[in-house]
Image (cartoon, rainbow, N blue to C red; front, side, top):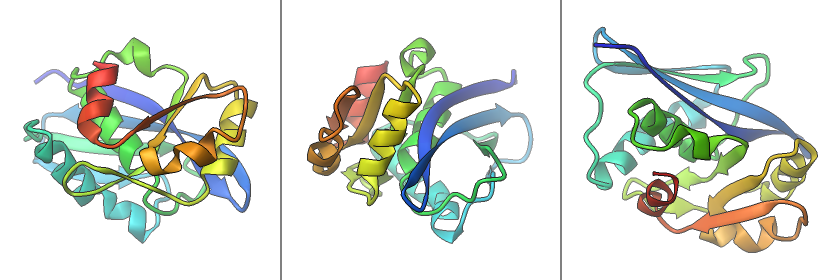
Length: 171
């Protein structure tokens, strides 16, 4: 198997300050399994299971290879479920199911339900402010976070109800 790589952006919160995070997915030969690195907390460690269920719920086969998810910078603590969508997008990009060029300069922030529905997360307003400050062209959020994200001018907000819709938009 040839090594596959995908990446996208997300945003971590340190108090009310947003910090840009690059989510990377690396798929290679080895024992099947998923490893998450980059200083994730317990809720983020659980994202492996939420993401897998959400991707399968979209009718996409889960990889039978070794999968490593890296959240950069590793020195910044990542907390909560808001990274679920970026983890899924990075994996789907590594599987070449998304157009990688479309993912550039876009940040993904949402929790995923096991059925693939995008769930609202806390802190979208400071995340949108951070996205604008970092010259991110678009912020992808759950439909229920759209009004909050749209309070910040100068950033395009893309809101979706389901992972399937996000995949359709970026494929």
